[in-house]
Image (cartoon, one colour):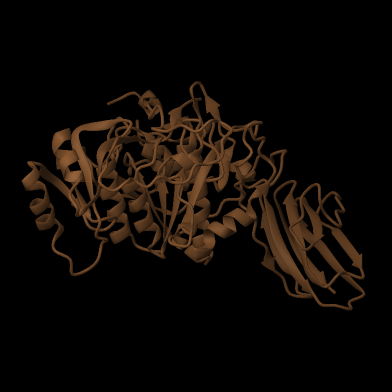
Length: 508
């Protein structure tokens, strides 16, 4: 079994590097008839992409591949019909170059190695951060469960028997030569952040392992494409797909596979920006952006990592990718999660691999609340905390949006008392619609036990630093009277100074 330090073995450089302060280069499309290099090739293996697009009624790809490859002396290893029409061959470079010139071939690319985007390190703070719009942290996390929602995790596998998963994890697809378990630890840690009972964002989500990486955290591009095609064709939707990996150079076949998944209207893709300290717009599939031809890419989110100082995560030669292709930042340093050593083991991890599952978990919660897949990316971006990340001086293109699990508010009826209880450190939110022309609106806490603090704000949820009324009295008897209230939504927040039971009433 390998050391978890193997997670730090990352792709070292892009084929074409952009300067740290450069604007994003447009996505590269391989030239027709060309042999495209890979930064870390699999010796003697080449992906052949045909000009024809996937469609029903075309000749079987297996027959087509044999007919094309044999005259050039190449041997077909696997075929693809979902992400693109093409196949993987075993051949020498001369045979591959000759095949690239065939008029039926779009391009040929060396099969390459891709690695998961995370490294190991020693302290949990992340869940607290994503449910806090601004610092300081509150030392609490308002848990939500996302019961019944499916998340597909393309990774090194999951230790499904771990106590964190409570029987909710399963092997959905295994595209490696290993057993379906996790022999690396990367996938188990990712799953723990998404849906572990203690360390997870979405506490009751269903965790589906799509194993594409081996115990070293390595996969070939061809193997990854097969796993992504499986998800596109077999996922129970609606669902979230977590991709805690990216390359350090463009790979058109990998982009095509991501596009096929994203074109399924029931799927939302969450992608790691990568750990090479590069502009993410040079890396696949992190670079994918919506355009007129690919509007479905709106359902692809690219995630960068921050540390506890709210700066771009970096460690040694590794560091979060950045740039305009990022959608969100999320915690990615000193993250506590499940480990694969035993059913009770835990570990601390860092990197964009572990920032990404925070977004996947929150996306799963939104699915459970009835938000459609098409609306999830826009909702996550709209809810994000703005200007909370201390961006690098050279970084003029990254969005300053930090993942935020914006609390939901329960409607209350005018003049109707609502029983409320909570434990120390908790917070609950309510809202009352107030019509125009009312002389006042009064919110009252009364009775019960313990100590709840009342906050009231117009138009948005109160914060400890932003409110219209905060009595801050000991116990549960608090009143906010607001004369001549603006018409619209008035929000009430109850913060548990100690555990309490009480009654809340709003009346206009």
